Image (spheres, rainbow, N blue to C red):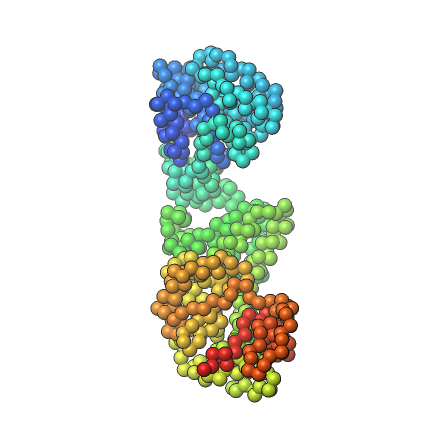
Amino acid sequence: MTAPQYMAIARKWRPQTFDEVVGQDHITRTLTNAIKSGRIHHAFLFIGSRGIGKTTTARILAKALNCTSSDAPTISPCNTCDNCVSISAGNNIDVIEIDGASNNGVDDIRNIRDNIRMVPTSGRYKIYIIDEVHQLSPGAFNALLKTLEEPPSHGIFILATTEAHKIPATIISRCQRYDFRRVVVSDIVSLLKKILAKEKIKATDEALYAIARIAEGGVRDAQSILDELITYCEKQITFEDVFEVLGLVDWQYFHALCDAMLAGDVARQLEIIEEVVSAGKDLSQFVEDILRYYRNLLVCLTVGSSEMLLRLPQSEMDEMRKRAKRFSVVKLIRLVEQFAELVNGFDSQIAQRTALETLLIQLTRVDVEVSLDTVMEKLLLLGKGGIASNVQAVPESPPPNPPDAGPHKKAAAAPAPQPPPQSEPEKLSLGREEAVWREVVNRAGTRNAALGIHLGRVHPLGVDTDGVLTLAFEPGAEKAWSYFQKSKNRGLLEQMLQEETTNAQSVFFLEKTVPDNTAASEQATPTPKQDGEKPEAGDRYRRASKDPAVAVVLNEFRGKIVEIHDPTENAE
């Protein structure tokens, strides 16, 4: 006796009615209403990614229109009559399924055009389901267009595609368009639970949510993964089984990679990559998993260990929570953005590995780069007469200026006495302590995520005696600049500073485009000035850039003069 042929879960549990279609309620409701009211269009266009129910819905619609258990089209096909059974099996004489990839010529469409005019044999309608219709040739589309314009009363076309942008607008305009959505994780998990209950197999919730996340909204992909896991595990599917069967990297590697980054251990990070590659893991998938890992850290830090958003085992949730606290919101956002850029665009594994290693080295050394920026800001503040540095090498009193000293040297000798830094340790000293500014950014992110994100692209240049905090934007921070142009956002920042600091009451932002030294030097030659007349901007920047002390700083830090402050300008 021949053993029964095995049927894959995706085929075995394929939806047979509109109610069984998962995650496409907006489409099934519209179709059922059309059938009830008798407003049945002659052409439908089903658009959506693979494995989310386009062809399945097309078959159900065909059964609803041709079911013989009812005197008219019905929203509940019986699935027992000859038409329903043959349509489900794909061999009904009046419902023809065609692959657009292999039947994409003009002659193929001409055959369809001739055959559809023939009266249906056993059903009410002659229905053509053309899958991947976007692969038809231009000539084939033109041949199809004529039939869509003047179809026979019994003819219906159901076109399905994953790439709607490749379909001519003339075709789309003659169809009712239905956009299928990727199915949400919770709906996929519910479906998998129903299948497992019928198959009498157990699985943990963490394993099912892992399957649903990996499927990325595709029901068929989720069912295929489940099918493979059932074969591997037989009676019990666990979270660890999902990683083992799919060849994913164990999460301990990601924890170790994160710890090495926090510790600044570049060598350990490169060793982890070598271990992953040596184990034969897919490096592209590994990078995607890194992105997912830091996304989870960001979720932990911003909204807490949300079970609904993470769906991880409790032990993993605890590990994520512990590490998330060691990052700032801005830092994690930048990590996610940079790893997201690394996901695509590599033709070889060696190229992606090199890019990954380079990025990890860069991210690990970011604190060093920030400290250099801080040093540069301190030096520039000294040159402008801003807050004094606490570096011991700075002389207690500036040397006297020569008679023809430029305005930048006047700025270096601030006439107004400043209270010593040690006298007010509790006040915000953003020009001296980068850690204080990081804490301000963290608190801003806690109050308002957008405020924290954009404030992370800003650096403090000092707080004057009136409580005005001067801020400068990083290069390329156009979005942050636009954000703080709105008065309500500035007001939100100032309110936060007043509550979180003791010396910052308001803010002043430098211009979005900082002056370029070369451009400034090329400005029109200044005319001779009378005694007491203030020099023009171009002259001031040119004088400052030629000063030997300033030139050394600019060359050492590859910087440019942002602003020159002359205290005599505000003198009464």
